[in-house]
Every structure is written in structure tokens, then in C-alpha cells.
Amino acid sequence: MEAIIHLLEQIYASSLTQVQIDSIKSKISFAKSTLHQPRKLHWDEQDVVLITYADQFMVAEQPTLATLTSFFEQRLQSTFNVVHLLPFYPYSSDDGFSVIDYHQVNRIVGSWQDITRLHQSTRLMFDFVCNHISAHSKWLSNYLEQQTDFEHFFISVPPATDLGSVTRPRTSPLLTPFVMQDQETRFLWTTFSADQVDLNFADPHVMIAIIGVLLHYLTQGADYIRLDAVGYLCKEIGTRCIHLPKTHLVVKLLRAIVDDVAPGTVIITETNVPHKDNISYFGNGHDEAQMVYQFPLPPLVLHAIHNGNSRAIRQWAASLEHGQGEHSFLNFLASHDGIGMNPLRGILPEIEINSLVRDLESEGALVSYKQNTDGTTSPYEINVTFMDALNRRQDNDDTRLDRFLLAHAILLAFPGVPAVYVQSILGSRNDYEGVKAAGHNRAVNREKYPLKEIESALDERTSLRSRVFQQLSALIQRRRQLAAFHPDALMEVMEWDNALFVFRRHGTTQHILCLFNLTARTIDCVLPDGYYHDVIRYQDIVGNQTLSLTAYQFLWLEYEP
Image 1: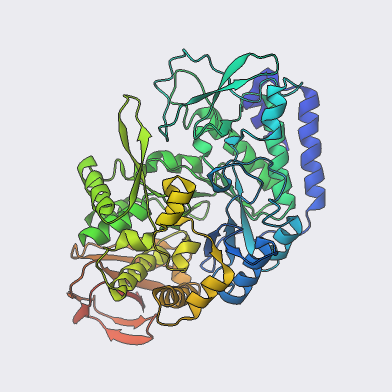
Image 2 (image 1 turned 90 degrees about the vertical axis):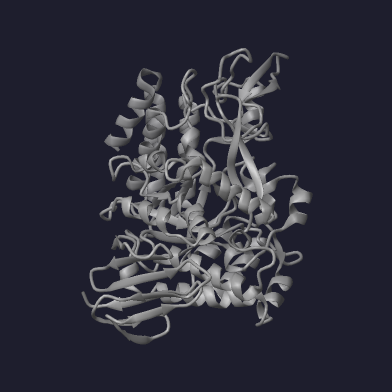
């Protein structure tokens, strides 16, 4: 508790009263007294995350969480042991990321009892949309009504203020007008949209409320807490208003609370920014997030397969620092958002980034832009399913499947904890009708399904959906059995032919050589001397002789060093 109070004092200095401190201490003590089920204390090779919406599958007159739970237990439980539930609270826009009430479950989705029921079959990651709240929320209503304790809940800025230095992830206006009860018009900070109003973390009342939400999620069983858009949390006029020192102090505070109340709970930060800024949320290695997203991985895998060249991903992978068990990466290829381009900046030259964007756009991907401080715009993310990102329109399904499995074999072999988006395990294609209906690009990869429709497609054994589901599920299940793929196991990147991406994973009891042919042609290579066992096909291979990898083939080869 002493560390928590010290961090609160660092953030708020003398503006935090003793009454407020006592209130926070009381909330924390009460939460601890209600928690009796211990968390898993560390990650291992068995941990693979499914990213999904709580309303992903639908059955008439049934809460969608009940439908998801049934589908998970029947078809996914042997493949995944953590489910990241994207925001399942009442919301007004952005498919859940404009939360109306942090403490309630959307009635269409179900109830907290339905969350508990799913938790009986898997560990859970909750989304904490802590930077902003819906313009339709009670918190904003209380602010507009000028109620006590809500006077400074949001950030009011005169519209003539020079905000040119502020980092913008969107092209929408940064300030949105709202009319107060006394008819005064105030312009409030809205980083992402007019319906997503940024909270004012300079106000202790906001922090007390946010701590209450965090404690509620812990008592409801969250094993992972994902801090959405956390880099934008604190603002100071005249700065970039991203990654500020006080933002890092807030993350340290949330981590200290989690460690005190529910040891083993993992804090994961979502900061879709260049790599150096992203890993800054590890703090000193043990005082901020235990995990950060590996944002460069999706576009680098795309770049490597599109170009048939491992140079960029190989050089980047060789530069990664090892977490030594204190922290790790959440690796992914696809998510509910697009494929971010910002993480490539500093890794690839801008000309190569723009070339990748044009290549993807020509094959049907959609592009979202961000506003730069000089008034120009740059590609912020590519909106596309990963299946369609990897492939061209004229490709046949065999080629689509080969490239898709290759990309996921890289993901699953990489150091860290892998996460697979539900649209990927389902082999989904671009949903252009969804984009038309929703009016935004991200809907291209957010399709929801009647349960009967998706089950029928999965049961059609020759369909691309079914083949992806069966083969990717089998690959994940095999990966979970391999000690060399423990998230903390060392990776040794090898200098081979640029057509191949090659690295070793060194576990405490197992060593695996991973080879990935990034091209559409057969590549010959010579393995180092020794004896190898293909852990996917269960075949033995002798080294020091020519080995041919067919188009997009990959191998995981166990060996004795």
C-alpha cells in the first residue's frame, strides 16, 4: 500500500486530500478481501490468446456471451486458454470503444454472470478503455450539469489555443463543443472522435473513479487488463500529449494496485506507436506493463511475404531485447483494428512503407490516415483481414492457405505470448458490406455471424474457412506442447538466404530451429550438421545435406545442441 500512496502523491502532489487517500485505501482493502481465486503467476508456452467480441456469434433470444461460451467450449477450448473480450459494456459507437458505463455488461451480450460462466472455461482479458468515455455517459452528463466532484472530469480548452504540437491518431477535430447547464459552450478534448471524450487525469476525482473500475474488473475475474490507447492519457498544452511522464506514473500506479490486489494479473498496454515508444511502457522492467503489443510484427510479416525477403524482419528481430521473465510481448498479426503503419517508422524507410500501402490498397485493402503536426496526412493503418492482406485477388485458395499458415507459423514461434484474432481462426475475407453499413473502414475486419452460418461453413470440410480453422487450430495446439516456445525462451536470429527467415528458440529443455520460406519458389538450403526432428510432421532429418523447402513451406525442427 505504501508504494501506491507514494505514486498517488507523485501524480497529484498536494491536490490529493487525506479523505481521498483513505477512500482509495478502503476500496483496495475491500477488493482484496473479496478475491480468493489466485491467478496464474507467470506465462508459459501453453498460453495462446483468442481476441474476440462478446457478440461475435448470434442465436435468436440468447445472450451472445452464452453463445460464445458454447462455441468456445465445443470448438476452441483445446486451442486457446485466454480469451480477450473486446469491450462488452454498453456503448454508443466505435464497436464498443465508446463506453457508456464501465461497470455494466451490455444487455445484448448478457450479464456479469455470463462473464463468470465463460471464465470457468478460460482465463479472461478485459478491455479497460481508460483514456475516454462516451459522450452519452453519466459521467459526461454529470459534468455538463455542473455537479459537484465532476467540475474538472473532462478537459476544457479555449478553441483559439495553439494545439499544433499535439500528436493526432485521427483526422477528426481535437476539440468538440458541448453546452453546459448554464448555457456556456465548452470545447472538450476528444482525441479519437466527438463521441469519445477524454478524461482529465489531472483531477483526483477521475483517478478515484478509474481505480474503482480497475478494482471492479479484478473482482469480476480479469486475468489480464488491457489499457486501451493509454499513451494519450495525460495532457499538457505545448507538448505532444503522448507518452508524458505522468502517463507512465499512472501506469505504474495501476500496476502497483494490480500487484497488491491480485498478484499474477497481467497489465498490457496498447500503444500503436514506433517501437522505442511502445517498449517504454515496460518501465524499468518490473514497474509498468508486464506485456506490450508487438506492433511491428504484423506489418513486417506482411512486408517479408509480399517481397519474399527476410532482410527487414530479420534485422528487426535480431535487435529485440530479451525480457528475462520480467516482461514479455503480446504477439499478433490481426486484431479488431487495422494493421498499423506507425510501428514501421524507424524500421523501414518511408518509401518502402508507402510501397506496401499502395500494394495492399491495389488489392482491395482500405487505408486510414492520421493528421500530422504540419497539416499533412500519413497512412495510419491498413484496414483489411489478414487473409486478404497476404494475398492477391486472383490467388487460389491453396495459395491463400499456404501464405496464411506460414505467417501464423512465424507468429507462433516468436518470443512472447501469441494472440489470434477470431476473424483469423475463422479464415475470414474482407467485409465490404459491413464497411458500407457501419460507415468506417475498420468494419472490414469486424464481421459478426449467426452461429448456424459459421458452424455450417466450418463443417464444410473443403471450404477455405474450414481448412484454415482445422489446420491453424492443429498448429496452435502443437505449439502449446513445445517448451522451446516458452515466451521467455531465447531467440537466436540466423543469417541465411534472404528468401528464408530463420531463427532458433532455446528453451531450458528443448531447442528448435525454425525455417520459413517467404517465397513462391522452392529454396534449397543445407542444415548444420546434426540430427533434427520435424515436430509438426513427426519426421527425422539428417543435417549437413541439401534440404528443399517448397513454396511458403515452414519447418520447426527440434535438435540437440
